[in-house]
Image (cartoon, rainbow, N blue to C red; front, side):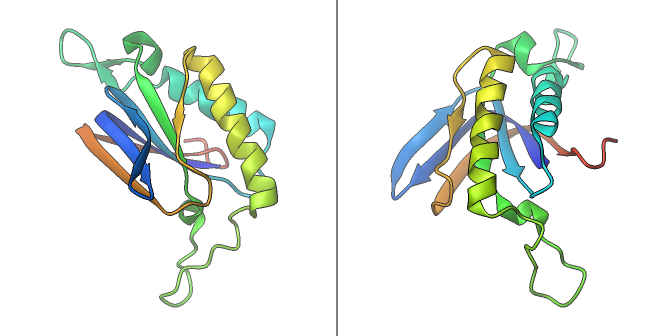
Length: 150
């Protein structure tokens, strides 16, 4: 499971010109799911995101978490995070999970994150053509891969 976490001042997701989710201060999470992902990956990643200290404290130091600032979150499924560009110029998405596997894991991820941050989490619409807007704050962008815990 791969996630791109972006600290935002605001973010929104539109589908067919209709806003389906929007937040103010918090994080926009792009999540890529592969067949090998498990509930353990979900619990580890949502816990990490909830406690990741990427928000500034009173001294301007990134020392506060999403939990500390009571920030919001939007989660958007993005299979392209598993693109392989090793050969040629056309990315391969063989590692990305098919919808029958990805959708339940995506829904579990959202549910677990709601538990971890104790609030409703916004989402995109799985498989839809989405327009994602954000005002990246910092900018702060973090990449986390559950198969490569650095």
